Image (tube, rainbow, N blue to C red; front, side, top):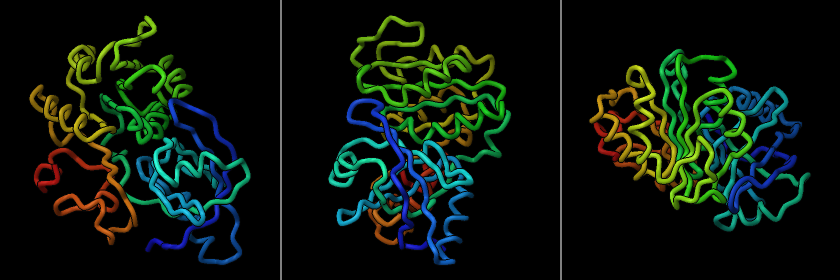
Length: 281
């Protein structure tokens, strides 16, 4: 049972990473109450693909994906874009400030189904954030037969998670698409969108991808999923990370309702065939 009372967490540090975007480093703080220790232990069981609620005192809270799940010392990270009151206030804070956190919430990426497969991961804009921890884990464990990443951004200035992508491109194929077409001329930057480059990327797979991980704008994910199924990829092999506005994270407020499901409790990871069966698309 999740507690609705936030745990204290320190803002350790941060750095700018993209247009109006920062990569934040947090640390869970010690709390004398035994129940809080129990909750802290629960955080160490966080799965890649899950999310948490971040509270800025007196202003409110908002959901964010883990780019790095909590370690044994309670350190974790998240990519956050400045968009509303909560995130704007967060961007004004200095290192050392204490915030509140609830979580972890939701269903993460299905690692048992992903392991040792031909994997295609596609992220758009901020949607790359939910993919970071799973790509890192797969690379760390060398737990794949093929792993390819496609990332799309509006402009070069809007590209996010630059250090991660720079490091990954020396290990796995990384295709960066720039929607406005102003690329830097490098071998891994292409004009257009992930959808535009998808046929060429699929040609690099000797056989069809066995797993596809999608994260980003819903319209982009749905369009790509439909294309992939028509191409021959099984609908059961396609997973989407859907993060609609999650106000409570425990399935009570209804803000993230998707026909018969809630994005916060039944997701954020959904399988494409199940989304269609439940009428959530």
